[in-house]
Length: 162
Image (cartoon, rainbow, N blue to C red; front, side, top):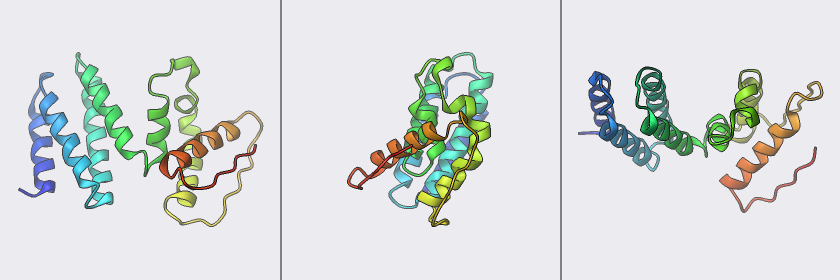
């Protein structure tokens, strides 16, 4: 069975189960997505997106969500080299709610983050200038981006200034 068929077959089984006994299926879905990265990055990211949507839906409805939360975190970690939003969410995963920077400002800063991804990941932009009011998160956002750059390619020379 091809990976695509396998992924959707396991996802179908997991969706049909109404109880909280989908731990094996979730582990299998994670493994298929993880293995797909070596062959087709875009398809692997699509699998991760599908898995995140499934997990988010189950987390809302299931009573026992510990392993679902952990699986969601693992999907975020899988995506971090290719998705800054996932990196930021994973970075702050265990922070106390009142100390989280990204989650509280995500809705407002996500369009800017997509522009940063277009500059750094998608190579759609040559330059990007941010002009925003004071105390909106420009400096902290740039610290997060530089930490992502260092994690993705630690051999690059990086300079940070605010």
